[in-house]
Image 1 (tube, rainbow, N blue to C red):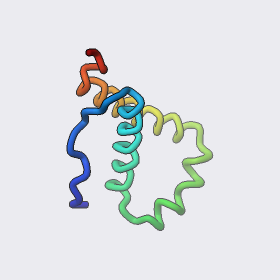
Image 2: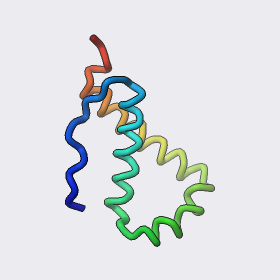
Image 3: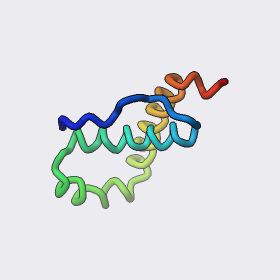
Length: 76
């Protein structure tokens, strides 16, 4: 993928930061598996797996830590 979409990790609020963390996580999956057919075919497997959902939550949390640090934890 060559599109340039991530211009900054800076967000106005923690909520926007969390949404950016989710976007980073989802885009990471798309980079790893660029075939939409495969993604849709595999979705029922991980959507119904507690382990897979916990792993996805962990990836989001790590990305949120990165965004929060970039934003100085939204301290003024």
